[in-house]
Length: 350
Image (cartoon, rainbow, N blue to C red):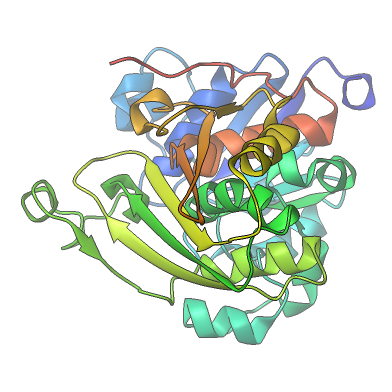
């Protein structure tokens, strides 16, 4: 049933100049039940979206506007925050005051945690709205669908966290982890954002491979929080090693642990019982592949059990499934639309 009987809802984006915001613009322009009414950017204010993002030329007459919340359309139903970490926590109180009935979907990390001390430890700054942290529901759609359906405010998961949790969830739920688990995730350069950095500069990345933020990446506490919230008895340790790969889009995750008390059938059955009916999650034989989910909202997962090692793998597109596509999927659930509306695109091959 459509939200309050409307055929379309009015949506806006705060922060539409970066890679995640640009992807969100593209998806919402083609959404059958959403009307994109504003997109903000301090840098490009006054310029048409098609002038800044040439691949969107001719698809909209909207121009970027300043993030002046009081001037947003009064009938706005949903606001997406595609801002860098540390921005949302400052402007969410303003949004709540100006638009008390609007839904909020935050793509940054500002509301994924509920402990301001942990936030400071991993993000390196004081949280300015700690009282609001517990108001946001974690937006990993397939694994938190019912809570999302009732939510007003969504904290969209991190891109690493999305791929890791999907690979790890059947193993945790079916008690395959006896002690701890090792996670290695390789990400493309777009995960570091639009602003050039040494680690994303093409000559430094194209023929290179490196690890970074070993055991201290900011997505680790949200992963641990998700599993502790989902399984109160879970006390496992996650050793997370993020890596930079020589490609642009996508995240490939490998999860490994040891268990000498289960069978290969147990592992296969666990993945099919959790994901067999999910539209956007493909269980594949052998290895997932980034090219098979490229520019799509799909997830590929697979598992292997040999020599008492349990291996799970996943592949996601970091900008769609790891950010904007999942945000639209959450919007669909919140407003009662079909979950795949506007995000059915299967990707590309090659």
